[in-house]
Image (tube, rainbow, N blue to C red; front, side):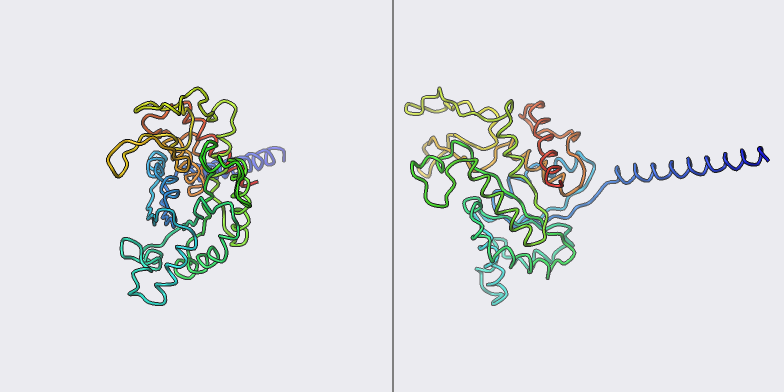
Length: 317
């Protein structure tokens, strides 16, 4: 009797262990299986910035990306909404087309997109009123012509702390006076509109704020630089800046001019944004991804990947 029980128990253990083995094997295969993601971004230079290094991260991760960017410099939600509306009224109206002579409808139907992203123009991102009714109009149009696609709201980032926008002695009513104000206001706007649309947020702005407030890795304005007597090619110390910042750039007259771009992302900011996109699109951690842009300090890159991961994880909770 005892022998039969022992044999039955042994068989039971073998079955359980075998089942666990196959479940584990399936999980490992699923985790390592290459993914193909089809992405359509409807935005402006900020969406281009945030996806600049995305193809490199995807390749390093062993996946495939099909990305179709719609980029209109400075474009707001209103501009994209009004373009498709004009095209719907008259397909011959050039105002309803992008510079590639295609409409939003044509872009939406040219592939079976997995994700479509929308975003607000950065200068308006703090003001929830500028999102309505255009975000909802875009959501409905996307759902109609790409019903299989998941809508994602790309949260853009605040300008650099020393951007001229924050230099006003008396800011206009409703305008952000500091980087922190801009981040707080745009975050509230993006999360509110995403909830209204039933869409997920790509928290690039959160990641920027986390990096900009980190005690070790944050950017600090150079207080020793002589801005009054600056000569090319001198630049202030901009270590750990996520934005382009101070630069020498040729003007229309061909002469070099010293100016500030506290809006757009530099290499570090582009990398951080792409890391956030990668985590959201592929549903896996970017922390161990081996791609690092040329010229970016490996230790700083590790921090940026960890920051992107934390930003996405925080939003899930």
